[in-house]
Image 1 (cartoon, rainbow, N blue to C red):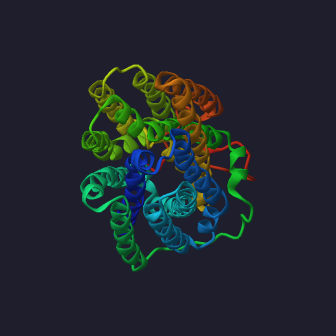
Image 2: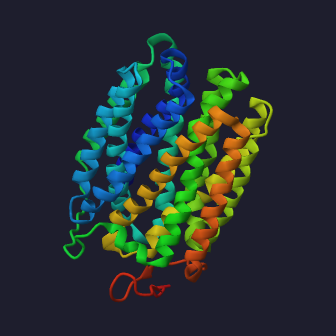
Image 3: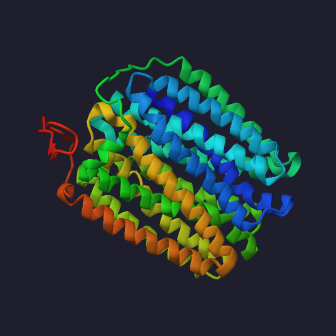
Length: 397
């Protein structure tokens, strides 16, 4: 029941972003918002999520996980409605910022609840949660494609906001075992002294260097290549399918074979795919690369969340997931603005090449930090204060 409730909630949160993702070219065409400003719209939400995940998410580790989830989801609904009904840049930015605050609070708290509900299947459950989020994200473009034409830009935002409220009411009725800790009053950034955790965070940031760039450019690239809007939206749904199907398998692989090995392999492949988007001459070839990219991501993209879950104590999971999410949001926000600007000034080849290069730098740094846990395939525990050398929890098999 916990997974069904929180998986559905994560799907509804992701659907809101999926709607925004495919509305940005309408913002440009109908409201005259530039590509650079669109990059800022995408980016400011990630920056807001960074602040929320670092400052608010740790409260979930103090016995308030359910409250943090409910607060975050409610705030997100307000942001969705503001983005839907605004017709100028400033209120759209405010709505996106509010939405980012809400998502940044809710997601780490929900992950904590799911992780601690069944820690022995951490990888598979996080993979399932990823699949639920990707499913929601894939619904967003479909909702936009059906509703924007006959009902206008506000319609898909209203529908997703309504669905989110329904899921919120469902989650509020689910019993969650809360466990509070009073030992950790500081922000969770102290966990970065655990080097494998720091490496996992850097690798997770590399994932969102990719996602921030992908999201900022997808609709614009297909619009400029002459791809019809419904086909571009269908492409997002098709991209999501391998992630939905393969996400749980990839999470299990990460736990069995080692999350750092899986993450590094997937991110190197992702950097290559991102660079290829910049040189494909037609929308059809961009789709072909995207399908291969989606299969690769399906097997590997959940591995950084698994690495975080395996490298920190159980009573710090929400804070740790918040640090990961904060780093990811900040990376995505910066790269959305950077690649949007590069696309506007120099074209897509330069924008995608810069993204791929930045990813490889992050991958090398993360792998170096995590070198002591390269073969990790079961959780670590920390004996003594944070920052001391962690060791694997003995296997019970």
